[in-house]
Length: 328
Image (cartoon, rainbow, N blue to C red; front, side):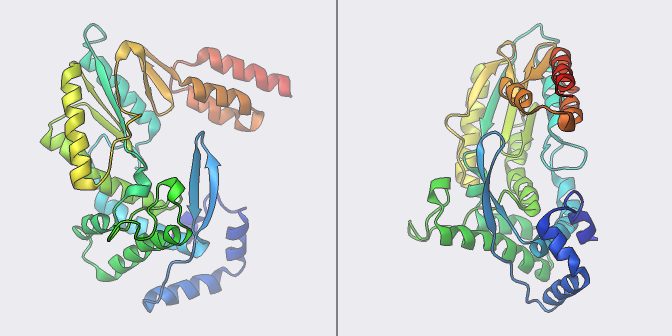
């Protein structure tokens, strides 16, 4: 089952093809390692992508990614019900488009159908994936996972990445150099792992619960390490931001990105997840639009039109169709 789930959309990848050539032998060997508690996570292959900013991705071997899928299948139904409604990253039935629509609904309610004041606090956690504290993550997982064999596998996956970044000393990316400070805590989960997406939600669910139940914030949305709060009083949002900052530092050992925290009036436009939300409508972010126009071709036309269907993009849609027609 995990192999079938894993290979969706990857059937032509060289490493997946190679694994599939001797599929039965490879799966049997992996099963033997797991059954006899001898499984050890392999090294990662690292590379960079631009989406649009440069990100350093660490890719595990196929056999390890199959294990990630198996673990995700077990953990997701255990943890997902405990997450708040307005957590939208890497969850079934959620996603960026629903998060953007939800923000539009919130701004309409707070502004009383755009007749009153409305402000949005936008925050971003500084180097989130590089800052996830392993000890704290394991403690959060152990609250619900009592099976020691499963926890051993989880510790193996979590710890494998720290060993990889420690050996390569990726300090330029924000990862801690080995014992640079006395008793440096083990940190970091890889962007490329399926398990990392779930681990991120488990970790930041602590923030979600604090915001919803301690601060009693009604209009809050989080997508991975980006989150917004909608309110009608700028001073209140400033005070909320300070409380969140202190909570992140004290409880999760994380920091807000100093250059990505802002409070904006709704009529100025709220830039969130690739869209800009304004009263009565939303549009694509300018950088997203320009990147789309540079890359447009018949092959990706349908995906771009789908993106535009979630905002007021009729004019841009016609322009894109015209470009594709000229390319034919």
